[in-house]
Amino acid sequence: MDYIKAMEARRAVRTYNPDKPLSDKEISEIQESIDSAESPFGGHVAVKMHHFDLEGKQTPSTYGSVSGASWYMLVGFPEDRNSALSAGFKQAQVALTIFSMGLGTNWMTDTFSGSVFQKAADFPSETPLHVIMPVGYPADKQRLVEKLTHKMLGSATRKPFDSLFFSGDFNHPVSEDSPFYKPLEYMRSAPSAYNKQPWRALVDGKKIYFYQEPSRDSLIGMGIGLAQFYFSLLQLGNKGSWESTDNAPAHDGWEPIISFTLTDQGPVS
Image (cartoon, rainbow, N blue to C red):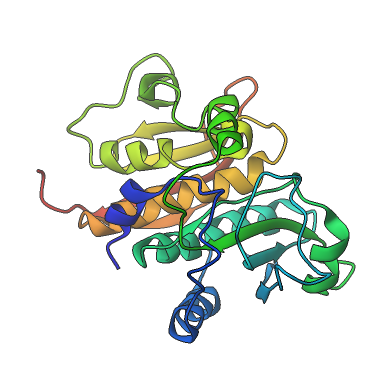
């Protein structure tokens, strides 16, 4: 899969075409992506696809923020840090598969009426439902509520690169010559709850330390950002390994999450 192309095509879709249903082949391909998704964080994540009858009594309520979607991916995980990070990391892999198929999706954490989705998920009590993701063909036109939601959440804006990622210390920017530069740009473009962009990073030679700036749902957003960093880095020809954050330089308000060490650098473009 061309991860970078999928990242560049990615956008939050809230209005779907109800007259263009997913095929059995498309559903199977998404399920294969769910089954094969991996994470370096461990923990436990439950994921399933569920179909709702839009004309029946089980029509899902998302308070008007989603329209026309009959298929939803449901994501549950315990309240521990590793599970939340893995939920984001795995969810990102599936979402990129969905976008590479020409479909749309959007992750939602608190704008849905829980009862119908929780009943459909049927997850154990220790693995509560936290995220729903509608999946389908985007409608030709956005509804007014979708345009307003994009504007309200700042979906088209991102914090400046140099306010998120640093090199050597917390006062100097990452050079464009760094093998981490482009993967960090793809991390910056990742979605996060309320567009908080909780990720921060410090480059130290061939090692990079990742931090989060804690906020609501920041861990799952952090997992999504790390996935976009990692898969773009691999596609650009780089290899490395995830490591602990032992000896990570401290920064007030930032929590060390994980580090990554480059072992094989691809060609410089």
